[in-house]
Each structure stands twice: as structure tokens, then as C-alpha cells.
Image (cartoon, rainbow, N blue to C red; front, top):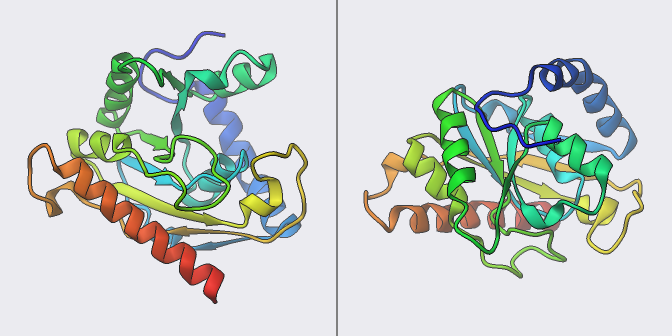
Length: 217
């Protein structure tokens, strides 16, 4: 299956997401359990969603938390290992992007998606991490939000590292939590080349505060 090269969530995937979202929400909240916080903070309209990244479960958790279909920017090195994974993620509208070359095509498509009112998701750390803070976040999510003039929505995830963290393919029954934080608005930061960097620093500060508050509770 080839990547979808135009804005919009694929029709079949959109219908499937609509049918599956409530059972998925019930299953995750009952089985792990998954708790949610701040879901009312999700803005209407186009938005860039940026979360910390512990687990393959994180995209599902984010979709449950903000309750809308998301087109994720996914590094191309994820592809080629599993036909099922490749087909599923591309069917769901994932936008592959190069880690080694300037991903101009992927960024243009992400901007077009936002211009059409869609939602784009990224993990600023770039990879699943063993622990929060081990990798400095990249500026891509903030750059997209600033360029498109849309909110950057931080989502802090805890517990998914214990449920299915890096280094394992087994899913364990562990409590997980997703906190949707206040949107970061580009206009709150001075214009210019430093805006994405400042927004990324603010994203990291908010994620760090939410993760610390959760583990220290």
C-alpha cells in the first residue's frame, strides 16, 4: 500500500475509527486501566498533537484522549519490517518522513492536512525512550504549528512504558494515564526563527511538569 498523498483521513479508515473508538476507549480504560485528564482542553479545528513517547501503545492512547482521527508523521525506518504494520499505518493515513534527508514532501502534506482542518501527530523525541528526558525534543512539531498558525497540543503519557515499553513486545496490565495539557499558541511567542525553539522548550516544560506530578503523586 502506498502512502496517502493528499489531505484528509481515508474514508474507510475514518468509518472504522468512528465504529472502534468507543469500544477501544472502554477496553483500555477497563483492562489496563487507562485514566484521562484534561480532555476538554482539546481545541476545535486544526491542531498539531505532540506527546512524549514510551510505547507502541501511545498513538492509541492519544487517539482515545483527544477523540479524533490523527495523521501521524512516522519516520521511514519504521517501515519494511512488517507488511501488516506497514499496511495498517498507511491505511490509517500515516505520513512517512525521512530521518536522514529533509522531509519536504512529508512536511508539505502535513501543512496541507492542517490547512484542511485536520489533526497531525508527532512525537518530538523521535523514538520510543526508556525514560523521559533522555533525548532532547526536536522542533518539528512546533515548526509545523507555527508555520500553519495552529495550536500545539501537548499530551503527557505515563505508564505505557510499564505496559509495553521499549525492548518488549508483550503487553502487560499496568495503569496508564494521559493528560491533555493547555494548548501552546504560536502567537504567544515572538515571531521569527526562534519561535519553534521557544515553543518546543515550553512543550518540554509542560510535559515534564505533568510527568513529575504524576509520578510524585
